[in-house]
Length: 408
Ligand SMILES: Cc1cc2nc3c(=O)[nH]c(=O)nc-3n(C[C@H](O)[C@H](O)[C@H](O)COP(=O)(O)OP(=O)(O)OC[C@H]3O[C@@H](n4cnc5c(N)ncnc54)[C@H](O)[C@@H]3O)c2cc1C
Image (cartoon, rainbow, N blue to C red):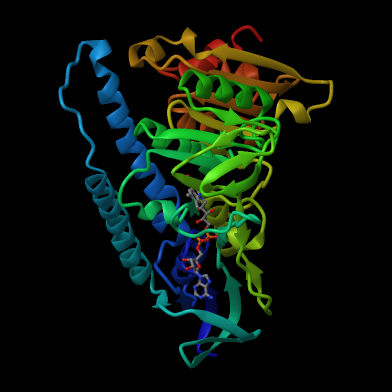
């Protein structure tokens, strides 16, 4: 055999498992047909959060006069923002490439296919391997009648290549990708509207989170249409099933992602390709479980939707509980830090079984970090009485956890 492991796909799942196996002394060859880092680094998590950051600065500047900070002639050079986003992605990719090289993984930049359970072929060469791991990711889901054309109907890949911002956009789907792009583009003053097939925005979230986000979208004047879908498009005029007619300059279809997984003989399938939860940290944790045998409780995977305020949750949702639970909610207005930051919209909510937390749902600035405190408590079965013993710093968002549980 040429190698102990052949890995197809160099996204978070592929490079994580590859580096960990190589560090254990295994010989590893990894095939990547595009760029190391996969969707997450090149087309997903990182570029969107980079755009989000600059959109938030712009939006803050536009309203700063209400704080007495007067800036004149604020204008937007979108090409510069794209350049900054590209620099961030390139820098992170170079660091990753170096880390992968230093770990001893051999990378072949070619499309690979699995010939049999011990053979991977790429660019006319066959590589003999002991074990094969597939980590080929996923691609944007196309909807019938809404096929991507890169011009009017965009995928989450296409939207990263825009040279200029559209005046208006209709976003199809209100999962994490749809909501984040709605926030980014609305911060840049693009007229955004969202159409969602389900009864509420972010259908995978706790119902109170969905309702709060709907309230926030109303306040921000981002129209959304629920229980609705695009029925027809004629000359760029979009008719929804409800009869509403819209004329957006662009449509972004953010209706989920389809696993890309070749039918082949392999030892393991990791990440988006395996068709479970499509999140980078899920892929990374699966890879850790594979290489290091670290246990993975798949029920305790945090979800985060970025933007202002952040949205995060872990564990059980209220709508999935039977009748033997209690809950506690703290409005973010209770927190001094939130007032200092002028970010008072949101809440922290926990769902409890006796004195143990089994679900946590946050709409707040810093929710992406706060959720890990709840994750630690749930995963380690820490009781409310024990959390009460923690001394939280003031003023912080985290001290809200103490306020949330003090009466329990
Ligand atoms: C817009 C957007 C925003 C996102 N934001 C977040 C976020 O904030 N947080 C989060 O956790 N997740 C986020 N995600 C999801 C995250 O990007 C994915 O869950 C993650 O990238 C999955 O990792 P993976 O390694 O399984 O697959 P991928 O990252 O997709 O990597 C698969 C790799 O395999 C390569 N490949 C495929 N077939 C072959 C072949 N035959 N030969 C060689 N190479 C091949 C591909 O080129 C690709 O590089 C986002 C996704 C999108 C689209």
